[in-house]
Length: 192
Picture 1 (cartoon, rainbow, N blue to C red):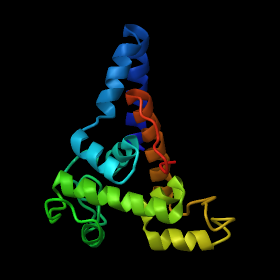
Picture 2: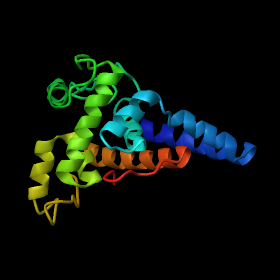
Picture 3: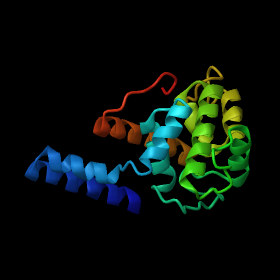
């Protein structure tokens, strides 16, 4: 509840700044809230894995808020919040240039996170489903796709039973749209 109140306050301040000082100041404030840190790494890895840069930024923003040292209660680490088994899996399948042993290294973490995103997009074919799997795990999403209560066709999710995952998917999609508007990105083939 505190986060929702803080977000509403930020939006109110941005609206007031936009009204008082013009849209340019409001846009600069949004750029501060939606940064493009690690831009060289994100650009390189997004290109390698054919991902939209704005999507990668949105995932990093949702997962860690661009904190390289982030640790979740579930044991996920780094910018893209990968668990150690997932990080090792991606590092074995898609070895980073420098060996890929450090989950807190921006290069390694973003590389393995982008590899996972690409793999999930290729497996599920739908961004929303891939994002749900990124957050809740492949096993949960595969089970939901088999359950009529959550999927009518076995390919799309009509509902996501984990409220945290449902909120995560919406947050990433909203952030991606803000990044697109702020920085003028376009989706490459396979990103939607």
